[in-house]
Length: 330
Image (cartoon, rainbow, N blue to C red; front, side, top):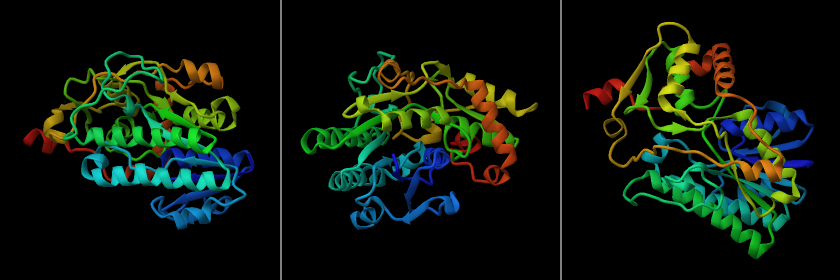
């Protein structure tokens, strides 16, 4: 690699990926609508993936690799902005793939564990079936939009000869993540001396993956000839209940942090449907990419808490989740 474009490079995973690329000496262009956090070490192009003209100013003929991270993510956002989820995730990805095909760049497309839906047969392999809920539940708009981006990517590979790889990230967490996800929100609330929130009984399980491990997988996929035309599960296979994760955050954040439970339906409404288990089979990534996660949950949460304590601007951000007091009163 020599010239790399990262769409959504100002986002959570994007900022960590860009920092790693810069450290390696790559020439990086960040394409995003948000102000750049990276300073003069990168080229910044302001734009929207829905605008092909703006994309063309970033993905030029000398670009070797495009890492497409731009998307609408987070439960709060796909419940409140289902049309944006579909437009940005589907049409935006189509625009990125079209432009990359025009200039001959390689592409890594970020997908999600959500594509598997609620298939109960875990761990999920890359070719396992998808099982979704009704179209009236907005959760499945996100799942379906990301699945359609995968169909688009495979279509460009097979019909247009695009060199592309799909990575399905599983419950990524780490420093600088918006406090709208389980680990980040729990840390944010704990450091602000507010109760950590668990939905329902907290027995739902997830496999949390530290962002540095995800960045490592992304770079391996971008560099491996064996990854072209493939999809990979990128996630830890260590299954942790939501209650265990919340209790871990509370214990590492210091004494006096409580864990409280709220009803999912009251907090998030009828258009949300929770999943009981989400577990990847990451054997394909181990076999073809030589990748496996190396950061345990305790180590990763401790590092994220340390970063958050050193960055008070982050703890001053608004809580992006449902307020448990309002949920209790609903």
